[in-house]
Length: 114
Image (cartoon, rainbow, N blue to C red):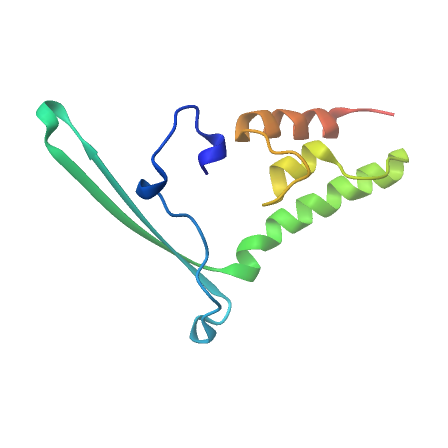
C-alpha cells in the first residue's frame, strides 16, 4: 500500500497484512479498514469499514482474465512474465505499477494485433 503512495506515512500509523489462517473462516476473507483524519477546524473524523467476501468465487473473474491473457501470449509466441497483465492481476507482480498505469499496460497488451 505505501509503495503506491506519493507522500509518506509514519510506519506506526499503518498496518496492512493478513492474519494467520483462521480455520472457521473457511474460504471467507475479512478486511477491516479504519481511517482517521481531521476536517474543518481540526475536528476529528473516523470511519470503519468491514468487507467480507468468499475468496474463491471473488477471485474467479481475475483468474479467467489472466488465463485469457496467457492464451493471447501463447498465440503470439510470447514467453516469460507478462509484465502488463501481471501488474494488473497479481498481488506480487514482477514489477509493480500504479493501478492506472497497470490498466493501461493491460489494455495495450490486449490491443496488439498480429
